[in-house]
Length: 509
Image (cartoon, rainbow, N blue to C red; front, top):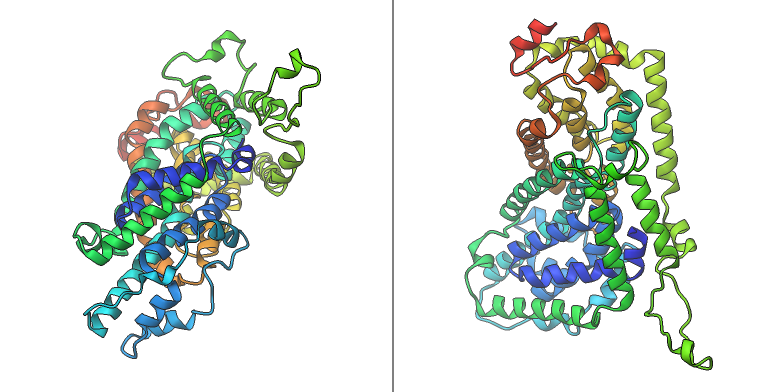
């Protein structure tokens, strides 16, 4: 589905439409960038989303502030060592990525130097304004990979750790049917919105987007720059033309795909899976059916004129998705990595290693469960800064499952925040591919990502803790030890154990 969306450019239409709606004030543009990136990364890969959104952001920023190299020259001052460092990187181009030039060429506008205006400002005022504009530019570049990482947590297919969790959950607890596409989305989507809003407030505040000088107060120069940016977005959206048959068909199947996934077994209401015997249909069945249709559904509106006139011309048949495109787009390395992760997790389980490590973590039983959730999320969020998200969750999820069994806590209460926390890698360029893509633009420095990402990690941990202890408890019945977890270790389990406090856990033990 993601490949067909990219093939026919539907993602680009969505991005430009959202940006045209939110407006061109820096704070609102940052919000628009984050909303679009997070929505697209729910269905596309985080890396593809970031690579597509960055050139759009660069083109809009050039229409607002002019050329980046010109801004750097204006900022050059002997009194500003940081500016010297920035200018020392001026040899790095914003379109150093292979995917950027083509998008940027499409989005480029004539005469970017038209921003240069003669006015009565002093050299110090021009330098100060240019420094501020460079700061806003950083905010635009850094918000896109962060939003892509946040958005990927909202769906089971959005990021690899989510898939690994559902696979290991089925391996450890075969009778657990609480987690599916619909129930995960009902839990994770509000969490994504909450974290996205908090992240927008922090990034917009840190990089000047909420400053009244650029956000609310009117200036002639600013109004002209914003008018150019708005015209750029509208012009590029106009170049796309009306929605063609292929885009309309992809939109229809995409919506149908989402609706079928959400309504199969949403838990809070009866889903359509009740028409089949239990276990007969799964989320994978829905995906296979919809994708199979894409392989033979035409990308151009079929004509029936040949039915009445055999000599009538007929358009060549091109399906919405070809096998070559699908084969090229399938991340075989991720599939092999997932399989290896499941094998490693099963090995840890069968050998007793996970149980042994979980037994040595018994002192965590003295910690209130709500605090343990924060500790687990914070630890994994920090660990994944230096290791891949997939490797992190493969290593620690079996241990966390055994820990929950040993202290008689609902395993989902620890496994869900651990899985989400593995996607909250914001502090280093090497943490995730989206971070690396943004850093490769040449304008961000490591200290920018550390300063921004440290607070983002804190906000993420607090958001996950809030979600788990509010609507998460109600959705997954986390207050009791479940029946589906008891057969794993009957000697360590007591039915209906409530963990409202540390004392209740001690009593259980």
